Image 1 (cartoon, helix red, strand yellow):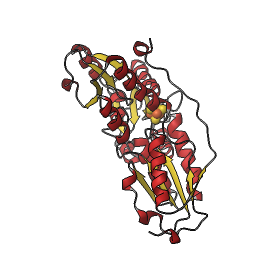
Image 2 (cartoon, rainbow, N blue to C red; image 1 turned 30 degrees about the horizontal axis):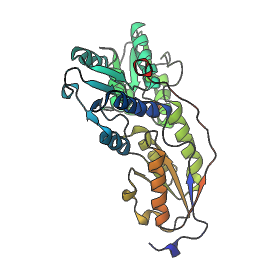
Image 3 (cartoon, rainbow, N blue to C red; image 1 turned 90 degrees about the vertical axis):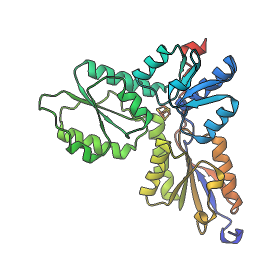
Image 4 (cartoon, helix red, strand yellow; image 1 turned 180 degrees about the vertical axis):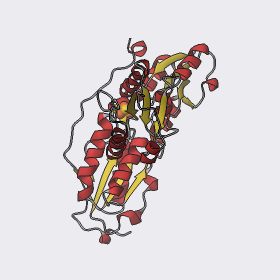
Length: 316
Ligand code: SF4
């Protein structure tokens, strides 16, 4: 593509907020702190956060990512990812004598505690979430029984509990706010006495990034979401802008950008999932500018000031 096809007032509009949330920031810092304190290797169960750039950077520093704790030598140091783990995994780590540093996001832990309390209070729990996602496996794995997964509206038709069953629900933290509302409304219609979490489980970062895309999408002709395929919240951002009628692409490397996406488009919108670093977003902005000159403009939006401290056994 040549520069002549882009007019001088072409712009890249940057969504606010975008990129790292407090839980991701904390999880990465836990791995870095463990590496600096104990040296390599530090084992990490599952990708610490779902971003290839972040994972590769930590791998270069000496982190070893594993899916199963039997890949960690006896007595080794292991970090649990931000998505959280089941009680079974915790027990396994203990039995293997592993030294654990837990990077589960405190907002995921909040959902874990809710599930345990609901089950203890005699409720059957419905978890709204995506099957196979590590957060869902970790949350459902807080209890041995009495929890069921609901992914979509059709799943609700298949539920059949006795009239006197006490039912409650929780959700994955990174879902589409709008789609989850539809599912919750349908659940309330079917089970009017269903008990909801005291505070919505979809986290502040997911909500804010989706709100920012809703604000940005009507002002642009194409949206680029910086995020990796495995990232739930990044996928939801791409789906959301697509639903708002804007062609949307998700990339986690500048080389994945295609010049034809920008042909004839004056305004490009850019956002980044909660696991995507700002340095990656900036390198993607630079590559878009190589396709033709564009001003970069930050949109107004929520300024987040949430921070989470390191786990006690690492903060000392
Ligand atoms: S997206 Fe939300 S739940 Fe997930 S790590 Fe970030 S703050 Fe925590």
